[in-house]
Image (cartoon, rainbow, N blue to C red; front, side, top):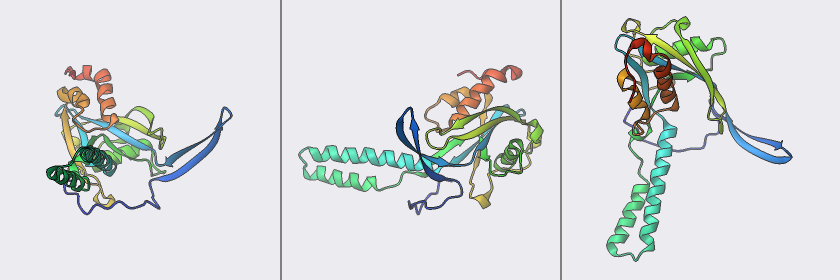
Length: 240
C-alpha cells in the first residue's frame, strides 16, 4: 500500500464512475449555472466484532486525498519561494529558493493519501438489494460472512452535495470471530488493496475525534451513533 510510484496526471475523457455536467437554470428570476458529477449511490457498514469488542474498519490509499495533499504542499512551497525572492537574495538564499522549487515538484509519501473508512461500496448492481450489496462488501473487504437479514439500517444521507449529490445508506453489522471466513482485503481484480483495521471499543471516541488520524465523516458519525444507541448493551464506556 505504501509503494506509490510512476505517478502521472492525465485528462479524464471517459469514466464508468464519474460523468461531468453543467446545469443551467433560473432561480427566483436569476439565471444560474452549476457544475456537478453524476455518480453511483453507495452503501457503508459499521462492523462491530462482539468477540473482541472492536470495530472493524478498512484502510486504503485514496488518489483524490493524495492529490489534495500534494496541491496543498505545492502551494506552501511556492509561497515560501516567493517570500524568499522578495527579500535581498544572497547566494545562499538563491540556493534555498532553487531547492524550494525542486521540492515543489516532488511527490509526498503515499501515506498522505491513506485514510481510515467504513467498509463500503458502490450501488452498481441493480438486481441486488442494498442489504445484499452491503453483505458482499463486508465479505470482500473484511472477510466476514454475515446474512443480509442481520444488517441493521442506520440511516441514509446525501454526500458531496456540492459536487455529486449521491446518496449513501449506512448499515450496522454485528459479527463474531466465527463469522470470519477470510482475511478480506478487497477484490484484486477491481484494483482494490485494502487493509483491515480493528479499533477497540473503549478507544473509539478518542479515535473519532483525533484529527491526526485521516478518516471519513462516516467513521465519526457511526461511532457517535454506536455510543448513543448501542454502548449501554455492552456496558463499556466509549467516552473520550
